[in-house]
Length: 183
Image 1 (cartoon, rainbow, N blue to C red):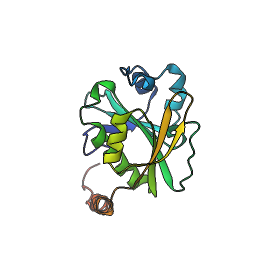
Image 2 (cartoon, rainbow, N blue to C red; image 1 turned 60 degrees about the vertical axis):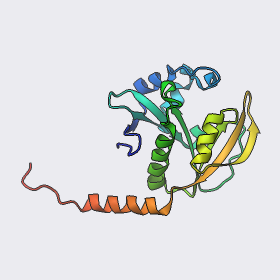
Image 3 (spheres, helix red, strand yellow; image 1 turned 90 degrees about the vertical axis):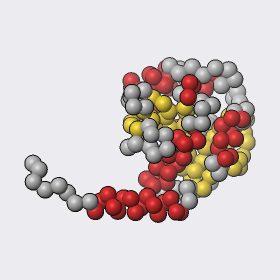
């Protein structure tokens, strides 16, 4: 599936792509996002997907469910879909995170039909917090992790006009006639 805003293509997380993500190195003050090989199993548990550039290189990833939660957080809002995401370090601060997150929210709204979205972010990551707030997320809770303080943020699903547009597109695509005489 091609994402409309970023132009990237969604694909399942594979072992090759997981190693690519593990190799990403964020500079300070974001180095706490650097991963190690210890997370390989989680990256391959089925809850992660990647967004690929035309070249096949991973531009970003996202996860849903328990993989998006942080130990120690209180996740009590029923009907919420937890999401987590990461953007390749050389793509940060270039205006690409917002379009990617909107693509993901709209995709998940259509496939999972949540009441709302929930994400957890390091409180000191002001750049990400500002982005999430611009996209409609609001902080509902703060908690202290082992090393960092975290914010739990909620956002409504993308607006009904968008969802109706998506529904019409699906109907139009399913009503397209099959090409006859091929076989």
